[in-house]
Amino acid sequence: MNSTTPSRLEKVLAAGHQAVTSEVGPPRNCDGSVIEHKAQMIKDYVDAINVTDNQTSVTRLCSLAACIRLKLMGLEPVLQMVTRDRNRIALQSDILGAASFGICNILCLTGDHQHFGDHPNAVNVFDLDSTQLLQTVRMMRDEGHLLGGHQVEPRPQMFIGAAANPFADPFEIRVPRLAKKAAAGAQFIQTQCIYNMEKFKLWLKLARERGLTEKVAILAGITPMKNVGMARYMKNRVPGIDVPDEIVKRIGGVPKEKQAEEGIKLAIEQIQELKEEEGVRGFHIMAIEWEEKVPEIVERAGLYPRPQIN
Image: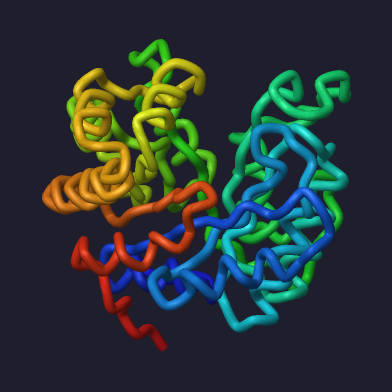
C-alpha cells in the first residue's frame, strides 16, 4: 500500500504499522471545549480521531466544525459524513471546505434513520448513499471534478474510508457489500463493534478469499463494556450489534464495582486476539463517552507508543 495523500493515518498503514483510531462525539450544544477536552485525553495514543456526524440522528455540534477545531490543535481528524442530512451540493461543498483546512481523512456513511433520533419527523435526504459518496470523493480527488462536471483545482486530497458491519442480516451480503465499497473507492474500513468473534473471523476469511483485505485496510471496531447493563442494552436494543450470551454472562459474573475493569480486560483480549488475524490492519476504538479509558486500552494492548511518521 503506497501513501497517496497527506494523511498520517494512510502513512501509518502504508508503513505496515497497525493503526489505531478512536472517536469523539460532539456535544448537543455549541461548547467546542468539549471536543478539545476529549481529544486531549486520547491524542497521544491514536493516529487519527474520528468525529461523529450527528450520531444516532441526534442533533449535535457539526462534525466539520469539530474537525476544524482538532486540526487547529495540530491533530489529525477523520471527518465522518452521513448522506442522511445533506444533498449532493452540500456534501461536495463540505468536502471542499474540509480540504481547505487541510482535513485529509473522510469516512463516508449513510447514517441512521431519523426515526431513531431527536427529530423523528425530519425529512430524509439520502440524495446519495454511502457508496455513491465514496465514488464522489474519489472522483473529486482523482479526476478533479464535481458531480455536475465543474473542474476542481486544487483537488481535495482525501484518504477515503467507509464502515462495515459483519454482523447485520443477511450475512451473505456482508462481504459483497464490502467489495462494492472497495470498488467505489474505500481505502480503509472501520467495522462495527466486535463481540461475536467467530462471526467476525468468518467475515474476514471470506473477505480474504476475495482479495479484499489487500485492497482496503480493515480496522477492527472495539468498544469496551462499562457494566452488564450496557452489555444487555447493546445485545437487546442496538440494531446491528451482536453480543453473544457469554459476553453478557462474563461482565455480569463479576461484582458490580469490578465490571468496568472486566470490560476493559475483554477489550484488550479482543485486540490481542485480532492482532493475529491476517487482514486486520488496525483498530478503531469507540469508547462512547469513556474516552479517558482509551489510553489505558491502547497501552495495555501493546499498541503504544504510536509510530513516528514524517
